[in-house]
Image (cartoon, rainbow, N blue to C red; front, side, top):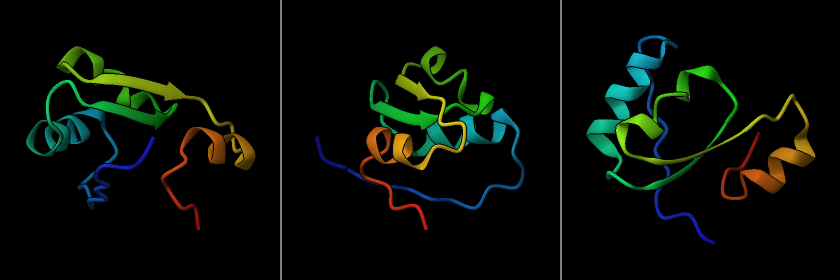
Amino acid sequence: MYAGRLRLPALDDRIGKALETFATKIVLPHSHDTTDGWSGYSNLAGLGYNHNSVVLDGDMEKAEQALLMICLV
């Protein structure tokens, strides 16, 4: 597996709608997306994305395994 693209926007707020607006403008439909377990991502599958949510619970080892392509600083 490799990272195709990584986008890190500054959003106006943390509500799911802001994220959905970003996703539909930037991310290609049917893309595979892996995120943490935040509830704001819950509708990505309903928007046509192949969404995999991983609840990390602050576990850095789990984050390294699940989100391989993201460097947590």
